[in-house]
Image (cartoon, rainbow, N blue to C red; front, side):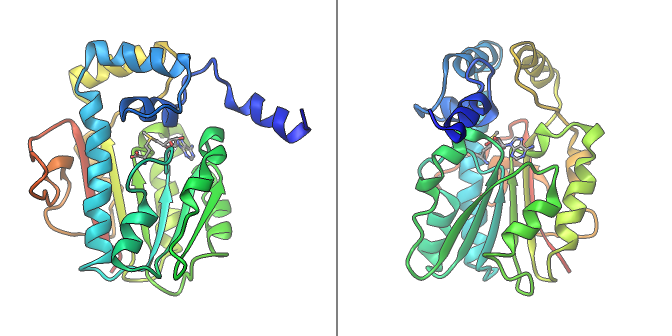
Length: 263
Ligand SMILES: C[S@@+](CC[C@H](N)C(=O)[O-])C[C@H]1O[C@@H](n2cnc3c(N)ncnc32)[C@H](O)[C@@H]1O
């Protein structure tokens, strides 16, 4: 085994559940290990709707990218906390509307890195790239993203299901601020996360006892991440209610999202 292969094996930590792999299991994927399935099943036992939360995030991605690449005319996307490749990844959604779109994916999960090839299947008119980085190092992300994205032109930053992984001690608001400050006027920010409720809180406690980490916030705390930006209609709402299309049930669930424009 080469040293880079053994580094990767060590980073995969198959005995410890990882968010990207738990999410992959909830979405019906095969890229997960026994520890991920055990953590997911423990949460599912208490909160079967977690599967719906994962699907709601993916459906939001499709609607938000549809809005951004369509009505808002955005051609550059920075998707942080990408997850394992699945159907309708950001570049496929954006390039279906605007083939020349440029997409940079960011995740810190080693298995996402292994599968990144599936995210790099850009339309020949556009570009995709992948950065193996932790969101808690936003300067590294911004520096590397500048190889692909033009920071003089609007960029949509997509953070679906990632800020809940960042504890308050790591100051997620400052991370968001650093990223938004680097964007030109006319850029957008998309955030989606589960909120604190008695059911979510106890399910997350179970997940934490299995080694998975997530920090639930209130709707007000999620809304505060958009400070200084102009929320587009309908504001911060339960995710299925953000511009639902005919395939969405639009019922309220304990996952909230918003999309906002930098003035
Ligand atoms: C709940 S999943 C959501 C994946 C995808 N956005 C979706 O909605 O299907 C969260 C993702 O964030 C990534 N992630 C968690 N903490 C991270 C960090 N500190 N830096 C970068 N990525 C992180 C995980 O590896 C995982 O892929």
